[in-house]
Amino acid sequence: MSEAINIQPPAQRAFGHLASRTRGDKVIWALTVLLVLVSLLAVYSATGSLAYKNYKGNTEIYLFKQVMFILIGMLVIYFAHRVNYTFYSGIAKILYIVTIPLLAYTLFFGVSMNEGSRWIKLPLINMTMQTSDLAKLALFMFLARLLSKKQDIIKDWKRGFLPVIIPVALTCMLIAPANLSTALLLGASCLMLLFIGRASMKHILITIGIAVIPILFLIGAAIFRHQSGNDEDTVSKKASTGLFARVDTWIGRVENFIYGGKEADNDEMYQVNQAKIAIANGGLFGVGPGNSTTRDYLPQAYNDFIFAIIIEEYGFIGGAFIVFIYLVFLYRCIRLYKKCPYAFGAFLALGLSFTLAIQAIANMAVTVNLFPVTGVTLPLVSMGGTSFIFTCLAIGIILSVARNVEQSEGQTPAIQ
Image (cartoon, rainbow, N blue to C red):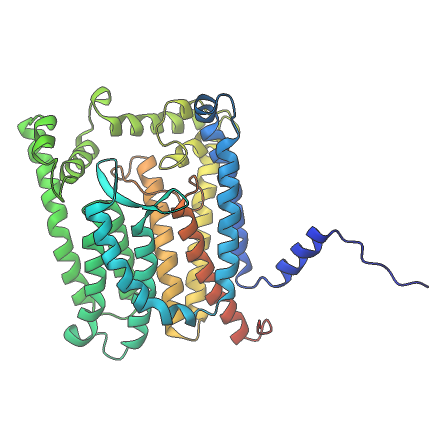
């Protein structure tokens, strides 16, 4: 009897080889793939009319771009998960030191969009990058490294807590003038990690008390402006220069959230109201894939408000399913934290999962008007960009920790 000949196509053999070298938590892999598939459907639906208008009938242009970002992102996840996570401890300090002047440069000389300097233009590839995405990744690497080294003295204010909280405060202060919402979410994620890292509750509460002071000032300013009936345009002119040009925007968002506003005179209220219409149209089961009508009226339907389009097309059931995916993702990362034998890997995986889950919750809360309008995207679902790539890198690092946990438990052979 002659031997069977392997006639698999080269692409199939390459895919099989790649799959055989893929390690880490299979549930996290599956959730990631599921979210990017949802992204393809949602982005294609949300950008169809926009692409038809901007590209003379070519409705697939944004879909092709999203496919490209997804392919690059999956490669980033694969190669990042193949790297032993201890490597990230080695580069954490250097990477964090690099991001500080980069954030400062962005603040003073960055590309201005939506009245805030949040981006720098990358040479050669003609793309903009939000430096806060790199800073978040670097900060969590550095914070995980510090926490793992200071467990014995973490409850000491001077030797333990201050050296850990100062990098967090510095990063958040550099991000805040251009992107307050990202700074607040980043600070909240870091404080949660410090709490799990056995930092003193008294020290954490002191930090929260200090951070709450400017937030209370914003709320007070919003209430005062609304009650005094100040002309928003007049206030805007007074706050339109300098590093704090965004202060009036923050006050306006808080005022709109508390009191509402006139849609005709307020772009943010228009976005919120259109999102509400999309949710109302969706009902329990939705209007069906590709049948959204609000996408033609809702600004940033493919980005900040993509969750509204998902609810409109797939209903409350579809929206609840997306929430469920992020919750399961967070649960698997918490489970990974409990199983990881080394402190750095445990803190790194948990910190990165916190920031992704909190970002997702914030984005969805804005869509359903439970939170003031922010500029954060829905991780892995909103239309791709450098933010999408950094999200994939974070997931790759989490899977690197999971891969090494599997090896330490003897579930898989070590990868050479």
